[in-house]
Image: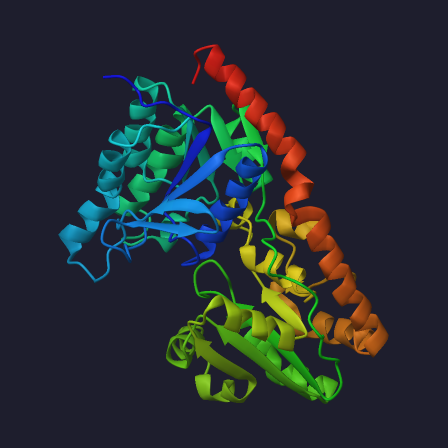
Length: 400
């Protein structure tokens, strides 16, 4: 069977909900723009449910093909387990009938799916690239450390992903993990929506924002527990705006850590799930965003998109010193570093130092400059072009 004619076309597929269903969609769109700037036509085949009869739609000039791999309703245990291991079969069938691509890029693919696509691409002489952005903690997965999901996670990271010679990594930790011939570091990228909003001054009130799903990756409760003391010590009203969690879900997190949720309710405002424009409005109305993570492999392997978004809007980040994101930031310049185990004393002292309008305004400007310097498309295009050059060389040598 002959291959269809290929004309510098790339397909980006995997575990993301395009075009704006999750942070993963922003990731693949940003990397897709790097490919586009290098002269490729980029198509997307996300795993979101189709909104059209045949799954096809256009987004900003890109051809998109919804694969409907993600479930829309809760399944029983056996069906959920089978889906976890075999998700991606629809996409492989689709790709078999759409082989007009020079390169297929897989975003965080399940183990069996990644091997299946790798074999298909080898057979039809299509180059294949892995986009690796996380390393799940076994304790965060259904069934815990010794469950089937943890085994699948081990299989993908130690076996399946190791067959890829061309890897795009979101962190320096993952770059070191793969140690392959052709690896490039690409963190989350700014996509043009960000900009310095009219920043609220720190006067009688301080507004914080957390956007995400706390409880596993992010540790929000230590910051919440510090809010009453912060309000009293600074003699200011403090409010934490939370996008992504309901009050019921947050109360359960607080209660699981041995505290009475009602004691903290005056200091938090929960909005549940918001769209991108609503989250942007919260960034514009807040003085600081919050990012606290454990010093664990999952945190070192990933790179939080929420930090990039916050800096892009000129909103400094309150964080602990974990991972690449902390290496990029500078304490009291574009971020406020705190000790997760003892947040209140250092945070109170540092906010007092930057509470005047000029100091905070400069932090906001610094945050935006950091975002442009480290996360713009232009900041990574030249290294990405080198990656693509090596990708073509490997193909000519017959090494995928």
